[in-house]
Length: 150
Image (cartoon, rainbow, N blue to C red; front, side, top):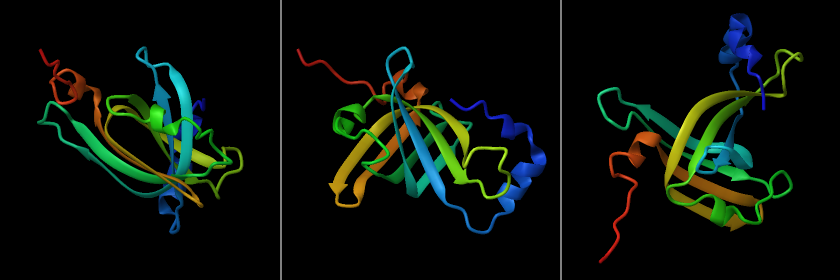
């Protein structure tokens, strides 16, 4: 994984922020229970949001919609990987047209989240993935828990 050395380059980040046309990407790393990576899915973002609320027990919630291409990802098991209550690490990236010393896509880590609502549709252009997610606190306060019928 990337060492994110560009996060300490204020001049580069300012130039990247001032770019008028930005292409947004996402990298979703599916994690196991120990939060070790199982699979990575990457695609071009078409819509998304991240809300931060410091007064709520679940501080970060969001959703993202992106198109994952078959040739760039192993999507044979995507319906099983992106499931309810699955932990994921999310990174958002932008094209780097400024500094060739850094990668072609500049990634910004957003953190570890829990999927609360997955939606996956397959088409000729690829796989459209729509995820709603919350931070890991939702596992502790009962929002993502279930009930066992007696």
